[in-house]
Length: 314
Image 1 (tube, rainbow, N blue to C red):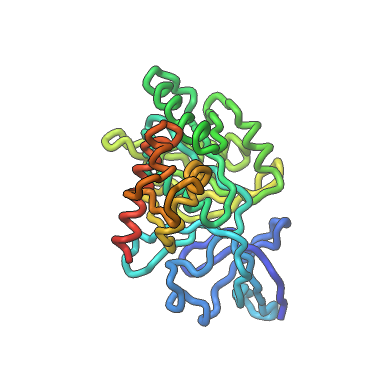
Image 2 (cartoon, rainbow, N blue to C red):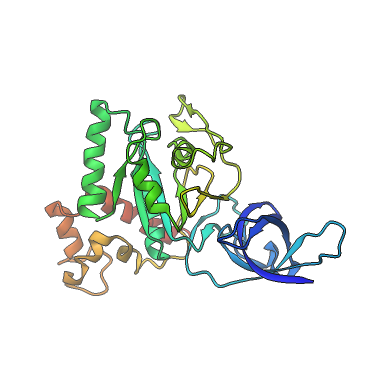
């Protein structure tokens, strides 16, 4: 019986592909019954990026690995599941860097989605970059949206916002170099050009399918069916995720939510009352910063919406 430790690089329902990273030598595995879904509050108790202990009976005719245990995660990205019978879905685990892909148009960026995604990254300790793709579309409306977007997320919230184009190659080399030696998660709503961007980073990943935008709803068609990790030629790994349309928060206390907004965290010590919900209290430094224009009203409204959701789902 062979035993070892490996990383989950793909899962398709009840079957998994493993590899002992940084080597890329794939082999299939299934899960032992004691850690199956029925004993988990998540739709997927094992996620891409999880480090697991496995065993293989090499004498068996069709030798397949068995996942025996999951190592503790150093971080993960999780969202409320669309499957109402379960609580949450883990997108990926043990990630070195997240690249949140957005576009100003086709599809038009949805700020509440961006905010929820960023809050989750902050809460679970995952470094995140925002990538504005399709910068080859530089009409007046797109440029106006981009100006406001960068003011909100770079100037005020302090996030790294990188403009790229999978078509022209703008700043692709910057992303490629930053991915080197890391496990990177690429995510975003459907249609932002995530798969095209990944193929621009490494043309050898040609087998990643590319979809078209549904003009009827200005939303992308899903092209990635399963969560999957790929090695990139320049070094490192990319986890490709299906395009997602919504991002529900999970496991948050409303008292801590504001601490996951960097621009709120920077001023909240000046609030007159502690704890402060930054909703109705007098002498609130966060509300004053919104009035002064140093915190974007869009971000503050997202915060209020998340507070309401946290009350609704409890």
